[in-house]
Length: 270
Image (cartoon, rainbow, N blue to C red; front, side, top):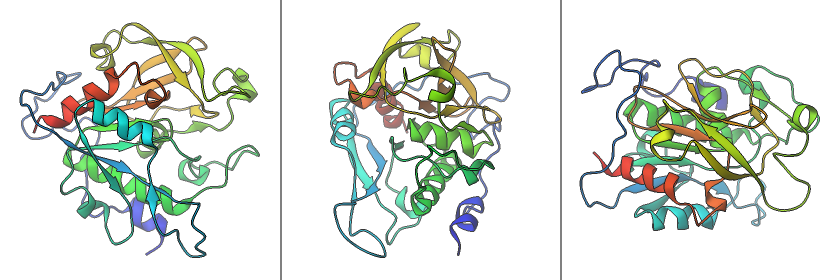
């Protein structure tokens, strides 16, 4: 099966945006934030990336995840499980998982949202795209909590028909991706009505390192935060237990664990 067919035709159908899930009240703008009521240690599945340090012509020998994500989840009280595609389907990979985290990573193939590649867009990893789209759609079908970071937010937006700005410096300069240093600091404005406002203050400093962003928002998604230049910095899906995407890098600021803690708390509630 080709990678396109595998992702665009997931194993089971999953609910359309706005479709109430079992136990949810129809017509609500947002579900209440699902704070955990039990002292549990949820298992968060983290999508792994190919270990490029291993020279394999057909496929790498292992998957890896950046340590800051694992440390952030551990500080928030979760156990992390690395999700790698070899020998697993997205359906089976999520069987023992309480929440899904899709981290930052390479640029998504522009063909996924019907665009030609910008000269500054990175070479696509179509196998990785296929794996993470499949994980995301399966998690949405199961109403698992989802946190998409940077690339993960882009995948969420594209899943619902959204598109991306492929190179922000063409429009906004280098403030979102400085030439030196890991990430730029800037303030984001959090929408008062959003789920995110239950976690972060209305003006929150964040760290970022990206050259792409949301152009057209996917159907059913809502913007939840903006940068000072009005770039959408966070998105969320109403009428789901917890589905958030953030453009910034919560893993880059170990002093602020609020986002990881809220995500883990949502995943702990079963």
